[in-house]
Length: 118
Ligand SMILES: [Zn+2]
Image (tube, rainbow, N blue to C red; front, side, top):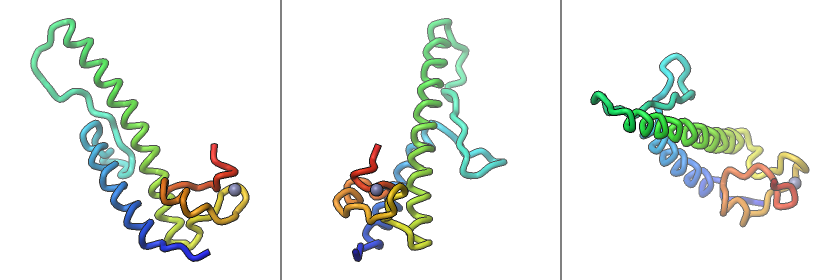
């Protein structure tokens, strides 16, 4: 199968930019470990009322959840980009057959064929 890897590379890079942009709104890069993101608390520094403290904790927890999700997504995108570089892109990680092109169109960072998707 010949796949247009440049097309998928463009899609992956575009998604990576988007995910990194979203990450920057809820987290900051760990200076000691680039590639790792730390969720940031609400940056509003005003002295808070009791209710506001609870709200902030809640939004910090949301930030943590969103950060974990986006990090996982970024990891998938990065492994797909690695696979593109090493020439293993588009192979199912379970049966090593080619992943259906329409599956890659829908999700360029897919690592399994339709039969083996979770
Ligand atoms: Zn498979």
